[in-house]
Length: 411
Image 1 (tube, rainbow, N blue to C red):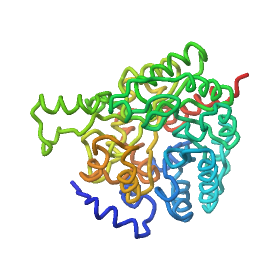
Image 2: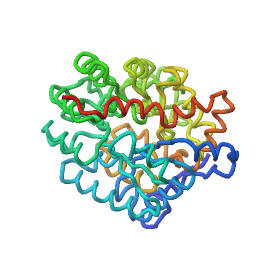
Image 3: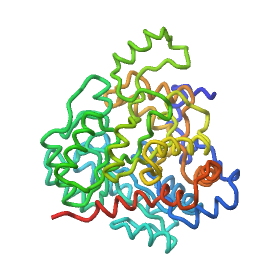
Image 4: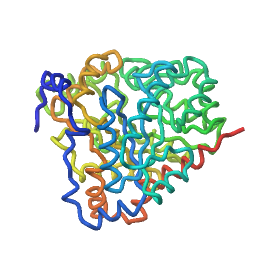
């Protein structure tokens, strides 16, 4: 297994790297039939690459989009709000930077306002971009600012990013002992999101808050589904998603596991979700989009995630909630060379006892860039017995159904 020395990773900041340089390209190993299937069908991605962290030049984004389009990826949900946008001004700045960078691509861009835009992009040879927020911090404590986010094209939004926000607690707050859930302000934000047609996204959010959100939605917004935009299911890896750091430490001690043991964990697999969380969303008609980012594969940190492993993550989710409630999301960060130093420099936002950084140091390098994986994933899912109709649901259909239900503003 590849070992990445953090000093080397940090030093690489001074070099100019091609987007997703760490991701192995599996395209040449895929069958011609799989490649053709991808080009003939809608395929939607989800990635998170903040300016100055995921990319530093417009050309990196342009190359990324052009390769994706060339290989049949229809478009992506692109995160433009996260810890790097703590207020509305920062959000608007990131929106401008990403709009500029994406428009540098040779491929014509269609910025998504309706579900039909995905279909039109596929038909017209365009690349579809929908904007996503992984935080409510740009609202600055004012729920009426949800309308501003909607005007700027935000189509999905998480109520928290790891930490506790004004809306509720995140997963890292949870593993550090925060048992708080959805706040009154969070309820106001949900009401505004439903009103303005923004899909509620539960990824990164603590299980206390997600339970409160789904309870609130089923009581006050019955029939409106929610999603996990990029969350694998913990049972796929037989791991514990909800332990606090002290509980994990106690479990390691009880099992007499030391740091050099392959089953030793610094923290629970906090970014993964339980079967119960997934099943609740499925019952609401929602979707769990499974991410293939390597460090979220609890303890399985290969040099390069393979299309087979990607397919196994998808299959694991289907076994829990069924084919109609699963989607895909790489959560690709384009290049981890900048992400790891960012996580180290912002340790308060990634207070996981070193779990994520340790995963990268032990081999979790690439982020499964979709253009390099998707055709191979098709082959692997075919081998597992999935039909073309199944794949069409997984790659776009299921999410588009939810978007159709949630993007219509409610009076």
